[in-house]
Length: 210
Image (tube, rainbow, N blue to C red):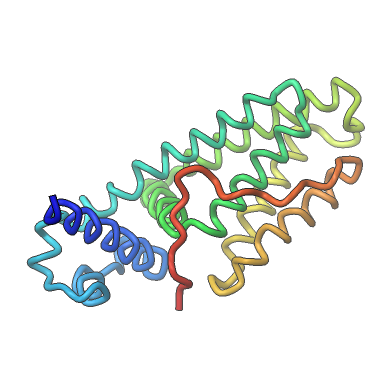
């Protein structure tokens, strides 16, 4: 039992170390030796937990996909309040990226994989569709003025959200949620201020990246 607990803890530590490596260097530049060194084990010992770099990346992208689906479902659960659902989705994503190193790694990995195939990451398509639908619904209900087409407003929100994330240093991610709120205030000035975003379910708080 103690051996199983120790193996499980090592597994989790390896995932955090790998997440930091993938965020810093991407899939192509990630190095298993550096990951093993960071947790004080040999590369051979690492292989006892993960058979390859691809296996290690998959252990991060699969939970990322599940977590992202969870954010979409949480926003969908309040679809009768489209502005509230938009807040839930936008700030939920920003909050998760701010605190969860494994979620960040998953985003980097799926984005890198999509670009390698000349495709748009599924996350971007998902968020664009959801945001467009919610903006249109808010306009139809009179909560937003139809000054701009829903597609245009959605494209701006998605581009601004990911633009801020990708241009912000990892050391400044604590400011990411604040910047997301500034986007909200700029675009949806009639919306109520969003309360502090709680820790998302299943989030893993990693050490700050150097």
